[in-house]
Amino acid sequence: MSAQTRDKSAETKAYLISVGGVDIDESVLGRITTPASGPGAGLTSFFLRFDGHRVRLGVKHSSRLKASFEGDEVVIRDRDKEIVRGYLEDAIAHCPEQAYITVSEVCIFDCQFCPVPRLGGTVKDRKDVESAIERILGDPKLTGKLKAIALTSGIEESAQAEVERIAAIVSALKAKYDLPVGVSVYPTQSSTRMLKDAGADEIKYNVETMDRQIFKKMCPGLSLEFILRALKNAVAVFGRNKVFSNLIVGLGEDDESIINGLEELTSIGVIPMLRAAVEHPLRAQAGMRRPDPERLLRLARKERELLDKHGLRADVAQTMCAPCTGCDLVPHRDV
Ligand code: SF4
Image (tube, rainbow, N blue to C red; front, side):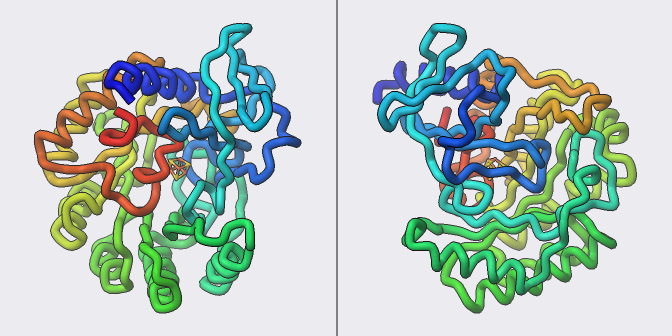
């Protein structure tokens, strides 16, 4: 694919992410996914593959984008203009090629962009997680497709209790399956060491925003400086290209704040995942704004520049969002 075609298809992906939802007949989607964690939790979505990219799109019947089938292909049109054609991709558990499992679908914190505390989900134990993996491995339609396991979690009782529970699950999974395991949790003083000792391969502690004022407003009770110290320590323990952090675009910050945040994270060896804010119906008061495609592309290209400057690669990750790419423009993969 020429650089020009690649740029054009990245622009298409940026546009699809920025609109976020597509009007499509859910009955033909097959294995759809309703994420249990993160800003899109509780919203139905599906995965589309096109021109070497993958994108996760919400099902939204009021969207300006309409999808229809032509044979095996899905064609997405904006009013009557064709935007893209591609193929549906099945999610295994939450996303393609991974079992990405939310252990505690509840949270004692109340980050203003996150619907999880308002969804009243369930809490899984080790057996629940193992049964989910066994079901996937026993499904003949998924033979050979499972490449990684990822665990994420809200906080049921305390951050430390959550980390201890996840570490025990990671240990059990690593003893049973020859698959890389990634973990995304809120850090504690001992979480990095515990999760590494349990056998986790990659780790994610989300900063959510690097704008200190917005962080205070959006994440009451959490500490950005503590998360940053934990990220730095995680790079020392897990190594470069193995530590990730979500940075949301659209919480009211400006580009300068994002770019400074990207520099701060990449300079300590962390790979940021730039995530478009989701205007979730359960968080209508939070004042989030889905970024436009030009902003998404501009910031993703800037991130690539900074990763290159600091000798980091986003395309060697094995677990979680960097190899999935469904929600983001991932440097070295999409741009
Ligand atoms: S990019 Fe991350 S949050 Fe989005 S679908 Fe993939 S694994 Fe889930």
